Length: 474
Image (cartoon, rainbow, N blue to C red):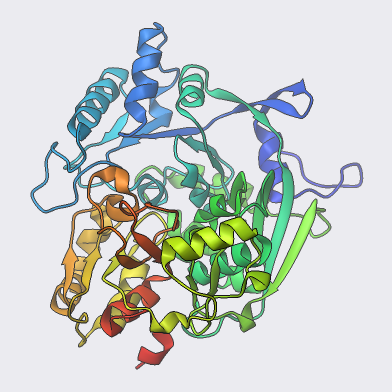
């Protein structure tokens, strides 16, 4: 382990983890990087595993490979291998067979630890500080919240990582986003993410590994940090990461796949050294005054189309987007410049996804919903991010709060984060959602999605229109 001294320059968290994992410098900014953990899911896992088997190559180290059923799996009670997606059963069955043959860890449909990959990986201590983690899923960057280097890959890259334990990776530039000041009441990590993207554009992080830092980030609990890093991909970054600290270690200790005993103590000692050095330099720095943030909601068809929930649809000059994209977004969302967001009636509300489906998310939403009812005509759904989250929520009585308020209470999975699961909202239906993407037809053919925090979703479900959760504070 190298530490900065008089003969070495100050280094960032990214620099340190990257250096520890470079197997060989291949030139032109490309390196062969060792991969510590590979996660697969049923939508892409069977493709990589079957291709590897077809080439006659085994999985190099099955103990480092994990697979879950999350993207296509049904979330209705009593579920099995059948799904709402035509042909979805084949993905589940083939992934199960391939995973068992390869001898990797499988969290099957009815496994008590099943859930969304980016929820269960930290929940089970699979991702650890300083580790490299890859998955054929763009939101793998979520897991950088515990100080790991985690990023999404394609199925072909997954096959290479499975066979060799390495990947060719172009070294990204580095960016640090500092949130200073204290977050106001009712403002969450989801609002922090949307604030960054709306101010600096959906392509603002392209080519960068983004470290989130500053007092407001340090004050976040680990689950909120996971939300913040989750949307680094909506910023077009390779990954997002946050240095591990005592909160991280307390969160991970005792988890199923975390080290124990002396190994744990030695690991923590090393993980403490991975924070960015005080004089570390970044290719770009952004600073945001967290005390001036408010709950955010999107108005258009990109996460960068976001403003404060008390705001209005911006004029083109203030939209930060091209004329073509602006006009197309307004037409798709059936909006006009100057429309007050809180005037928009909704037909559905969704709480879930790898962004906002952890126990802390559900607790905050339930606190707002307690003693209230969803507005007439609004369909509301809550999907826990893992079966562990579901059990914990039920032990705390949160499921009853959701159901009594008028929400559907589901099994864990990606569900209506995206239409590929087979279930969708209605054509041209206006939906408020705690997910990460509001692209055209993301939640169903022609569905109009507004993304926001779980609190804003809950408040809007009760109001029947986009609403400010701060107005519901007890």
